[in-house]
Image (cartoon, rainbow, N blue to C red; front, side, top):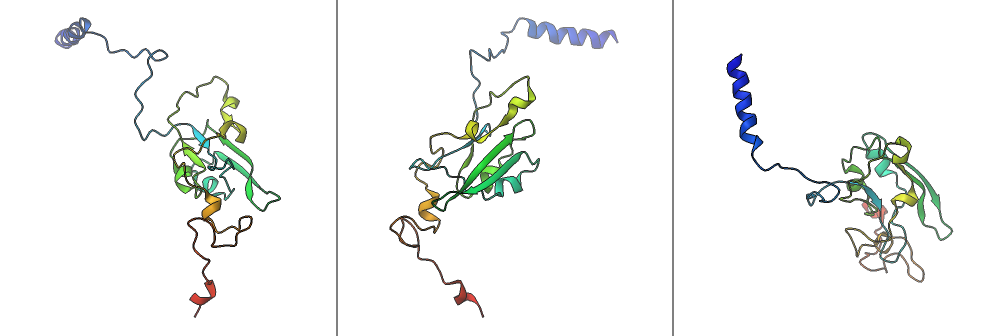
Length: 172
């Protein structure tokens, strides 16, 4: 028993005179890995329109069901999210919602400073999540490649858009 105690004191004495390894967090920010999955944001198209088409894929793929979404149709025919809430108290930051999003609207950022003492402050609404930038995909515009008609253009005439296929040609 004394031998184990002396071994422990020896290890303590060895580290006592070394320089401490301390991160002074608020003053010195930690090095974040490039693929860090932090706070979720909703991005916009290059033309400033919101990218989310309220397809419910993010809500369906979320393993903890922390995303609440409601859709509405705008007068111009576009479907958008009327309400988009994420409960970060339940979110496990797995990134499934980002992978499932067909429009690159949901993106995870390296922001990790979301701590709070009030649990209700961790419910972020659409206004809290929406950013003005395009995020990781600056040139992608879902509405230009989705096959939706654009003002003064028919389906298949937009940038990088093929003419629609005749699905009946595949039938037997």
